[in-house]
Image (cartoon, rainbow, N blue to C red):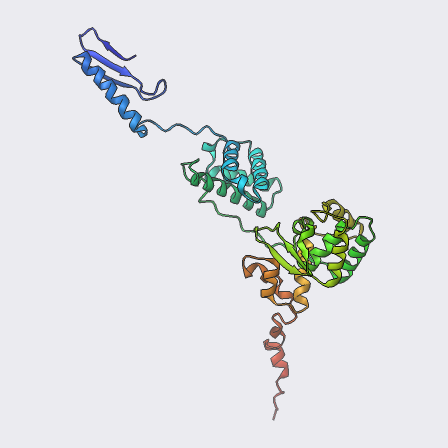
Length: 340
């Protein structure tokens, strides 16, 4: 269909500028030249102003968006590969929906199913954070122009996790058990975590050159900023002795070893705290031994003091005035009234 002559003698311009499925234009003219000019005019207008045409539906899937995000941004992040895998796992759990199907309502339903399957509020809050960040970055790079479909979704209220820490007897039992093993990698990794408050991954990926002058330099940190923590002379000598046999990385991966040893020692821990308990143990004992909360914040490299305040109650003097300023104790200290 294009310009053709009708039986009435008029000329009909009948066409679709963008092919089948696009808007159809039909108009009659007395002369063929007028009909031809009209067709050319409309085609030019549609080309210059595509908004005249109905917007095409985004046929990309969530997995396709994730691939685009990783290629243009995620690959350059320190934790890019880890986040990439988590996003693909989310996409798989959601049966890889089309981008156009992702809405507030879609996520609420997806979150409900996740919770029913046993996921915690903290886990689904992380799901939301990852997906929001995905769309924000795609929009910033020009790979998504429909706004963040999850911008109005709020996180669920998450009950604070109980912070478990090891008692002195448990620490002695664990270190003695580990020291008796033939392989000392797990022993030293554990001792470094307990002595510096380091995360397991930070201690496990230390290199020979990161140990110098009674200090440990952590570079594989959560926020990417290096952290320098002093250690006692005994631990420093143990690490240096171990380093004589190594080049590059100091320790092998030993997460599996510490998991088995904790079971062998009968140390039961809440889910998700198998190695993080060493960081909690350092912080708890640091405060119980009279450490300063601001110093602890720097050692743990917390972004806000509020995070570190979780350990404030371990300080010997924490809220101690509650025992001397309460109305009951003051009542008991008053002299009895004289009855006449």
